[in-house]
Amino acid sequence: MELKVQIISIIFSILYGSLYGLIYNFNYKFLYKTLLRYKILNNFLLSTNIFLIYFIIMLKINNGDLRILFIILMLLSFIISVRLTKKARKFVKFLKIKNKKNH
View 1 (cartoon, rainbow, N blue to C red):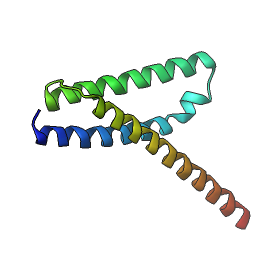
View 2: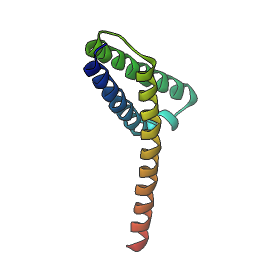
View 3: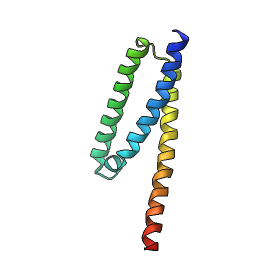
View 4: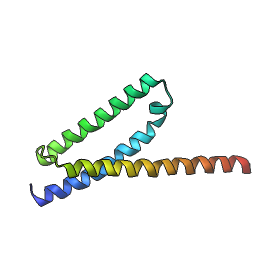
């Protein structure tokens, strides 16, 4: 695999993992505030769709030559993105409560 294709694949994996983390947190309400069977179904369908789209795009980028590094980078950026957006969500909630108390 050429160096240029590897760099594009690495950058795409990191960005896609971050995007997946944002989508996951955006759908937090649907994933964790419903009945158990809907939680499992929603989580399974969301994850399956995200990974299938990832593999299709990687197929276009580097002809389906997936390396474990690409998947690890995607998962690490997903975890980092989820943690950062959780902190941002808590901060916004804190600001809303603080703003209501002041008015």
